[in-house]
Length: 215
Ligand SMILES: [Zn+2]
Ligand SMILES: [Zn+2]
Image (cartoon, rainbow, N blue to C red; front, side, top):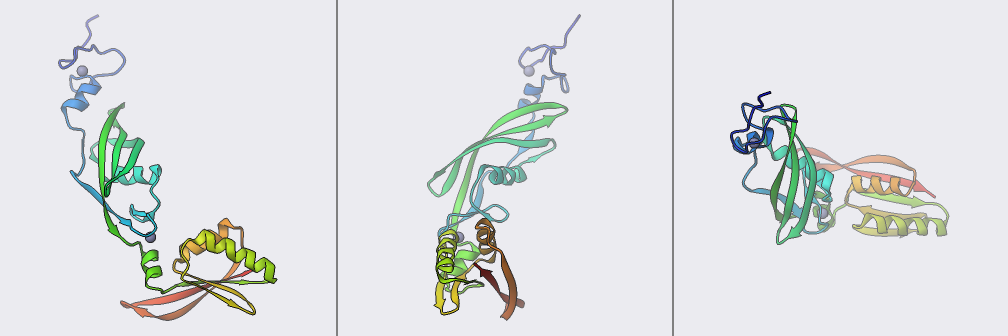
């Protein structure tokens, strides 16, 4: 039986169905199946090291993968299979292996990546640097217990604007409500949340949140 032959590499049509006369690999090679911006860049917080990938996050493979996928333009379905990045000078550099679904054939491509990092501050570090705070964790309860809990919370929070110790308990002033909630749930602490309007900034109401923890 006569088999189709790929005009580019000479392979015959055995396992994979040809696409427009070419074997899938040569088809992907000959026709550029994706486009990517020449230069990728994003912001990096010079204080906590988070980078901006749609939101401020600690860099990890999964998040960077979906961010990179969003930068690739292709007529085909894509999936980022693997990413290897290391931190170079003001940039993340490495490779990504991306699979393209070209008419039922998964074609893998190795893409070289360089993501330039622009120095900046994430919103919570900015708030922290300015000495302002938007969250107060009030720790109440028996003295030994609340001191132990406060220590754990302060360590886990990383950035704390100030600490107030009063007869009724310890107040921890933090610049990031999201971080504070995450820390409390990680430490398995339940809290009562209340919000207070403290002013307006750029036409928006500014609230301060109090998280009251009983230990
Ligand atoms: Zn071929
Ligand atoms: Zn930061």
